[in-house]
Length: 394
View (cartoon, rainbow, N blue to C red):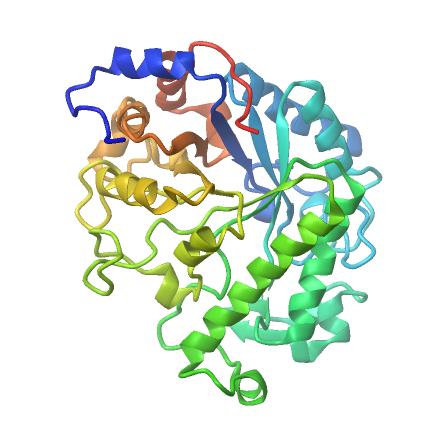
């Protein structure tokens, strides 16, 4: 099936969407550094709960149907985990009991509103600082300092250690067993984004486990492939029918590097984060993919209008669902290119994406902007494309 004509009117696109029985309409609810929630650390439990419910209510008002809730922002937890400490974003002190269960509350209250709740985990980030002594006393990174790598002023678990890979799976899957979440969700952080002049020190792990690989990059990619494939298998073993979705950086590889890549000139997740997102789709290890296409239509280095068809073609025949990650946070930001100061830019994204049959919906970064909507870009999306509420695709 070919995409519809470039002349297709926006009204026709809306009619197609209104006829759809289901569509993914999501928003990310970020907790790292208190980006979206809680508004600050140390709030009373009832205030935290009220703010959380307000975000869920906003999702309903915007006719969204899915909230992707960040529940493991930095190797800590928004539920009473037996593996990791309570998250610092709640009380301001990592490991301090907040007096309630944010994940359990979010699941129950989202479902009561007809929303899906996808639990968003960051596998390897440990801290946004580089001092292990600042971790809570019982933190696994304190007990296993050999698991940690300092890089770019932050702390990470070393993806090259099998015991780390098993531990982070155990930590995340505890939430899958304990709660009726609708999906496990990861974002774009695997190996960290490159920092100029710095080296991610995994020499010892590579010396021990890297035999048989042609180079360190191949070994690193295999480490992440194992994390993805093993997690996928373990989710299925639990047997609660949760989906597994990943939201990668929007460029796998550039065509100048690889003929199978996209017509872009941007950083490459395959080469820089060691995340072979295309392989995960082709192998069927994930149920859905949400590429972060955080660029405007016509952006020379990474054109939204070129990336949507690339991802549409990539998922064809795989059974993996495709939803597009949208940069709502850029709308109205004076530091961004002029296109992002047009309230209709995001609406045009949905019109364009609607021409491609494998695009099953969109997800907005992030909840704070879904609520504040500083130039009305989200309101335009709702008015132009979401005439009624529809159920999520599953």
